Length: 354
Ligand SMILES: *Cc1c(COP(=O)(O)O)cnc(C)c1O
Image: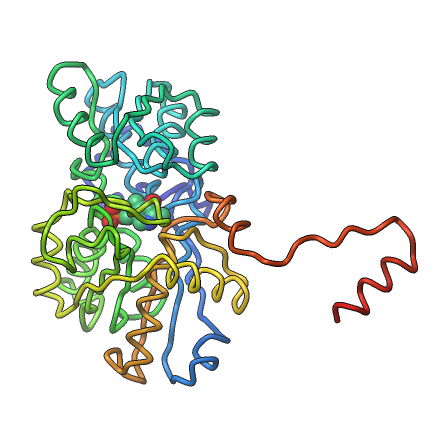
């Protein structure tokens, strides 16, 4: 049967009915890739999987939530949606609004948005408000303005978003035949880690898995309220998707840490970029910096034994590497080799670099 998106596939588990007009771009059903080389590189016997959410239609997991949020906004008669975004939510909102024929307003932080994400919001025709502040300032404005203008909020405080995003956990359980022992994610607003927990818990209660995973959230050191224990007013990190100091799902995520037996940790920008490069060079998988935080964390905790050998570990790669080409190029020291269209010159360049 033709795959037509996660709402159609999981409609019995989502807040829709047979009359709902589904707004979908075929999101979900993303690959779960087993790592072949990296576990050997670090000399550890673990089953490590990547849930490659960068392969969603707009290149991030935000599409899972946006298909639900926009479907419900349209069902409720809304003609416009609004979100604050570090980039990927605005890309998804712009695309799904275009698909639905409604207007998208997106509030992004001035200057700190990856190029690919800005391109997406622009080309899909969103109205872009670039705020002189960070994501948290934008989020505050969205909450206030939604009371004064006819727009539906599609940030992850919109609970339909989490309902859509929980389906990633369903896919993982179905594919592995059980829940993994550990599920590692990068954490910004903590909506996604919460959504995964909702999904895993739902399947566990119905006996579709024998356990729930320990949920492990990793943050960037410059934006790590879950690690430091207090909100951060001026978050800074190269991982712009998680440059958030006041997480919207703060309480939920702290409960999940306890209930699941998981933990939070944080990593320097240098460690995050190192993990991004390691994954691209050793496994052929390209993700944006924020996503690599899950791998940086999992590798550290596997190496230290906190995640013991014999475990199954899923790392979510939240967004595609092409979202942020500047940062990718910036961390490569190899430059293209300039040659003339001459057989000898090309041959020599090959032999020199074998
Ligand atoms: C949104 C986003 C995150 C953070 O997800 P939260 O639900 O805010 O914790 C991480 N990585 C990428 C690429 C994102 O777009």
